[in-house]
Length: 120
Image 1 (cartoon, rainbow, N blue to C red):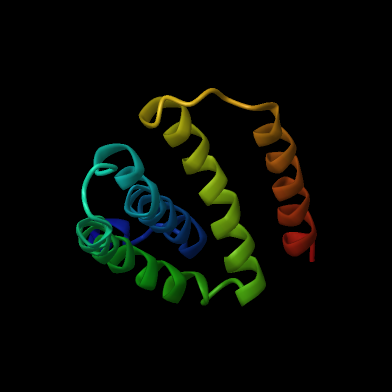
Image 2 (image 1 turned 90 degrees about the horizontal axis):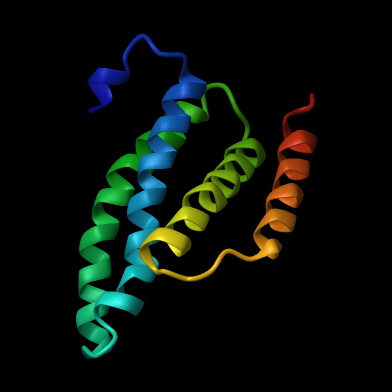
């Protein structure tokens, strides 16, 4: 997977890897609420840890690549922006919950954070 990103600018490599990592993270953290709600919590935790393994296999190289061109604050805010971008479709399509206007307000706040952390 990482070899496929060779030749792509580090920022874009980081963006792709963090986005994929975030898909795994979102499923690890929240999918058990829908799919395993009747199972003991320990089984949900074990399943989540199994999914999180793949999250970390993408997230660790993403942060190492991103640290070449961004500082830690920029990496964190980028991660938060990606988190919301992945989370909202997950809530709507997978969890079948209605969209809320609050997601828009949260997204605008995150856009402000992105602007301020990357403006210099």
